[in-house]
Length: 214
Image (cartoon, rainbow, N blue to C red; front, side, top):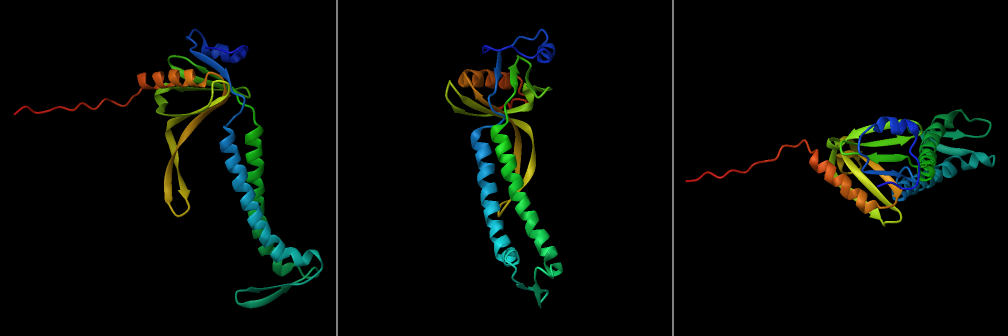
């Protein structure tokens, strides 16, 4: 199953004589939903920290003094005496930069083009920005998410690897790695091929239930 495009020569070399069951070119690096989530969170973070910037540092911008308490001691900072406010200003600035960084990352993810994905009976091969990655089907857990339609759809393939991520008020949570194939046609047919190959290459041994005859 291939669309009307030519695969890069380096990718064809890696495929070799393997049977190509599907080959697609993703229009995006990640689903729009994932990128928008980062942008929204970054916007909220930046807006919240900006309140502290204007409330704490705002008076300095118009030549007025800032009164605050440091370790129980009343302190005054002014355009002529910025020393007392340098450390608090750096801390607030770092939080603002984190929010801006999330916004930049979100927009970059939203606009970043996807790569080529090729499925063979043995593995999934991706090619993006000159980099080739080959993943055996046994590395996937079989948890697949599909969204969209036959014209433009997204597939998320969860892997057996992952990492622990700290969640606010929920402690640590295991988050599996995932491969995203976004903005492709024939998404449902490709999902069926992936599911079939993952199941065939599942390294988990089957659990046999035996009954003892009395």
